[in-house]
Length: 256
Image 1 (cartoon, one colour):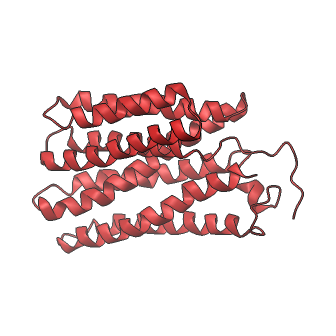
Image 2 (cartoon, rainbow, N blue to C red):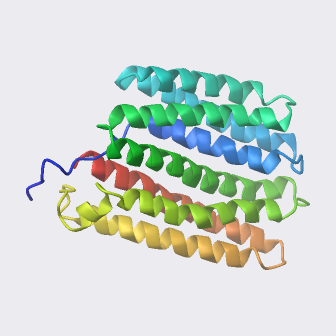
């Protein structure tokens, strides 16, 4: 096994509570972005808020079971309640409350897991960008399916989410390369436990995610309805590679 310098430690732990709350906050943020102009049926809001309420509840349970961070756990409980309460007809601006409070919670979790200074900045940046990245790609896949329910929707709604993914991916990669980051895994300064394979797996996930996002953007330029279904299928794959891009990197760094 390769020697690991004591100075090269992960700046965040892979904490299930923080990951779940991060995902819920990002998803709720882009749900607001999609429904704020009332161009989509209420059922879509019910679906997404139900999914992310479950994630917030899972975050709360994981935090209590595995090591509580009070601000994060309070935020998880509030996000859970707001996600369910705002399923009813609510002014769009109020839908922002849950993701904003969730954002405070995930930053609190990141700061608790960091050692201060630069590590705190990197940890906070990673969870905020990660929330945007995972939230946008999950919402895009679910919205693609919603075109089966409401086929007359404007394609612009889905294009907007794919555009967010397009710009969020490089920010996500930068976040995971910042010291101490995946460069240290690739060059062997951090032992991934798999003889460097996880570093190369991460690179493959980044490349595949980028390819899938670009191809999805191209598919949505086609006028036929089948283009939306093709884009949705591509987004299924993109969720898997995005998961690898974010969580594999964080898990690898957490054991460094």
